Image 1 (cartoon, rainbow, N blue to C red):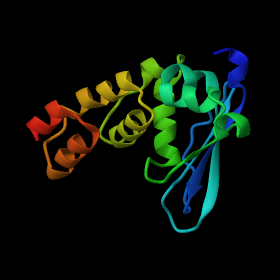
Image 2 (image 1 turned 45 degrees about the horizontal axis):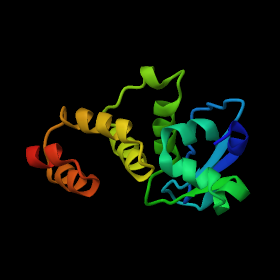
Image 3 (image 1 turned 180 degrees about the horizontal axis):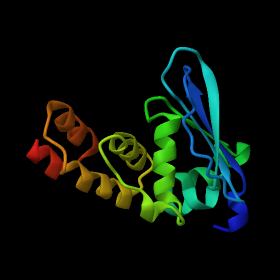
Image 4 (image 1 turned 45 degrees about the vertical axis):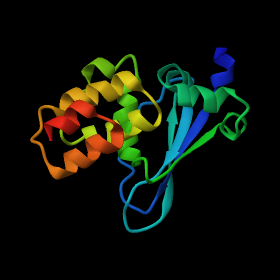
Length: 159
């Protein structure tokens, strides 16, 4: 994979309204990510992100952006509302950026979104960090269901 196969890409977030909730982190070479927020009115949100960062972090993004798939041709990746919101993607993406990843704290307010994105896009080291963070939270039925959904066996046993 060459760096030229990862020029600008758009991540699109289909929204049903509300705040886009993004930190404006825009590297020189970027991809745009498209996804969804839940709220009252429908509107699309876009994120300009580094396709190189996405491709290095995730085998799913790498395949999407280099294997002659539609995303590779259109330079747009649509993110389903089922995966997460634009705000949750911002949290996930900040964990991937070399300049900011070490400063990101996974906590109760962001773990669910980061876990969902890291599982879907197969960013295994980040998923394991979410699993470790979940150990600090009280067990609950919701956490049990989440552990089952994402294959977190230790968390499942704990809940």
